[in-house]
Amino acid sequence: MSASERLAQIVFHDDGFLFDPSSGESFVANPTAVEILHGLQEGRSEAAIIADLTSRFQVGDEEARRDVAEFLARLKTLQLS
Amino acid sequence: MIRRNDFVVGVSGINAADNPGPGTGVARSLLEDTTLGARVVGLAYDALEPGIYMDWLFERSFTLPYPSGGGEEFVDRLLEIQATHGLDLIVPNLDVELPLYIKYADELASHGIQTFLPTMRQFRLRGKDKLPEVAETLGIDVPTTRIVMSDEALVEACGEIGFPLVVKGAYYLAYTAHTLAEARGHFHAIAAQWGYPVIVQQLVRGEELNLVGVGDGRGGSLGSVAMKKVSITSLGKVWAAVTLKNPLLATAAERFVAGTKWRGPYELECIFDPEQQRLYLIEINPRFPAWSYFATGVGVNLPGRMLRHAMGLPLEEAAAYDAGRFFMRYTYEMVTDMNRFQDVVMRGATL
Image (tube, rainbow over the protein chains, first blue to last red):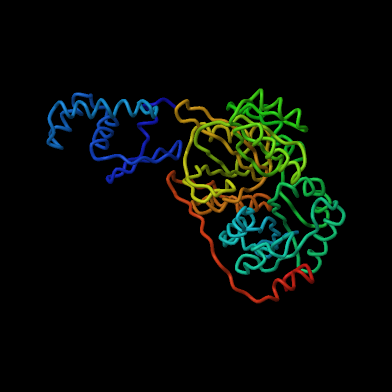
């Protein structure tokens, strides 16, 4: 199973609780991370996700860009990206 | 001929203690298949096995001689139970008694006591020394494993595998060792309690995933459920768990029952490395595991399905289960009269 397939099957809950049904692992994500993960699962581009964050969380473009970059790096270490 | 709704099933492994046997979960599953109508009796080796006191599961319990005492005495005791109470089927749940039940399966059947067990050849396949061979046919990996019978062989195996590693008994116990001194301590403790051989195995990092299933003996599956241990006791026994659906594990289970034509219950113990997407086979247990009721709780009653298949009763397709169902053990206290203990000590059976 590829990292993107694994990411696609992760079950999201609105409170930020995430469950990977192939490994049984669970994760807790903050609202920013949930927004980014939703965007990735929907196949949105990085730029579109950054735009979503700036409008939803009232943060600047630079801060949103940094959050997305850090989170993508984190996903890579978890083999989810 | 066994009549539906009027048969007695003997279930062993009713030691629901800190190292729990599978028997109480198996009995609970059988009773929850209400149209099966089985009556369940406990088969114990000690008057302090908690199942003896769980009269809502076991209508009666009987003690048996230890399997190490030899087959004739063992079979005689089962026939005595059959004569005094009735005994149509047995679901043995302890590793150490399985060779005896497999050896005497035909003799028991000739007296009207059925079992649904792997053959001796299949049983040997699950030996820890056979794991690399089996894992290859399942298309999964196996940690480097060495069988050791002496201190010299232990030192050599530790040198080859490197630390940390796991020292295991052939049937029970597994300890992690970080040094040769630790490995030696575990080696001698396991050998003293369970004898040889002792297994030395590479420690693989990842999530421990287990699967319980039942093979129909013709290469087909009567169902399976996989879970991840979320928390374990100091003895390594599951305390909390979550169901999952792992394609690698599901495929390995299908290949296992198809390739071996496995007959009866089994458990695959694996380590899954999600980063490398690799699955390692750690152990095959030729029986129901202690957590079998989890499968029943999510809709896949494997003990019930196995008995239905063994008795030729109607059997629907195994229900699908959801990933993310949670299992939690708890402790419970029973208060009862001393006479239950007295009856088992003095007469070898509850009244």
